[in-house]
Length: 279
Image 1 (cartoon, one colour):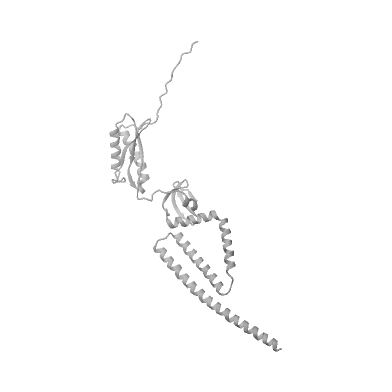
Image 2 (cartoon, rainbow, N blue to C red):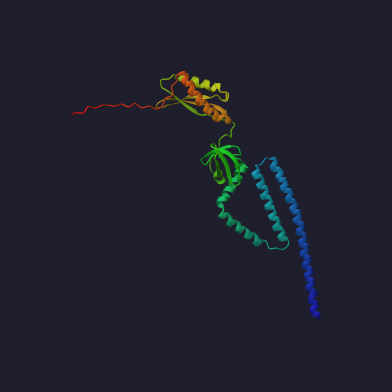
């Protein structure tokens, strides 16, 4: 009976010590949890303010906040579990193996994901820009994490994976403030070359959208099969590019017709020989 009593007392004492030890660990872990959660909240808020001041793209802004928030809280959970005595090494290894398997299965999506991060971070183009990429020319409507949505010039909606855009060639059509408009006009070999160049210069000087500095280049580019080709290269603001291009082509045709300058087209002389047959 005394032996049983001693065993019970030892058991109670052991349980009491274990309870005190676990309670101390739990209390310490809870303190660390609340302090850590407070620090994470403050850090994410400071990061939010910093990215807002830097005018980070909205999509990247929200994504980075979510990533930092989730990552830091996951680390905090692991620290909490370790402090209360839960074995975390096997859990971390299992999560790592699962992450590797998912990464291999979704490597195409991860490539697009990484491409989206690069595009949003380095900003080779932004929403509203006109780009030429993957065989499409259009205005960027939206840059998402996995895809970029563009609206083509004939108002079609095209979704391009970001992996292709980040690893391929992208032409940002109107990224610069000014652009050069290259146009070639052919005149007949019989026409007055000096007069034709003077007409072209007059048209360029009379268009207010064409910049005076740098001055438009007008020079002979080739002695072609059917024409003398004159290259005209005025500089304009990017937003005036297409308007100047089309208006100048029309103005040149009207001016050449009025001044008697011929715009030639390919011609062929066909000679027919009649051979008498001996009967």
